[in-house]
Length: 131
Image 1: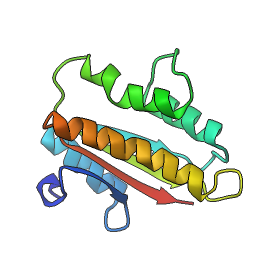
Image 2: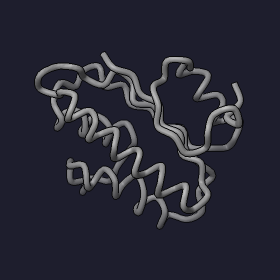
Image 3: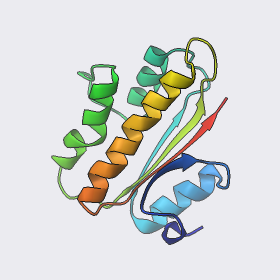
Image 4: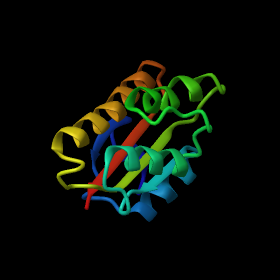
């Protein structure tokens, strides 16, 4: 798989891709590969904690959507030049404790991050799946 075949700043379902192919493509392109398996998470708080742990966020991470956006954008941007990102959120919960609205809010944070990086001409591709 070549990342050039996937739009540079997008958030989409992982349907057509395998995680291993995305990881290999990110490695080949010299981009960051961020992966979170959220199968054990059932609530918004658990989802945010799982993402923070998987992405190695700092201990001061606020465990809310604003803090997630800050960690995915400003914090990384201040770390220096970035080669690009391939993000995989696998097995997002689909239950009454993490309903459609909660999923959309989370995905919107990654869409906003994609826009942030697009303005800086840095590729940011995010793929997700549901339980």
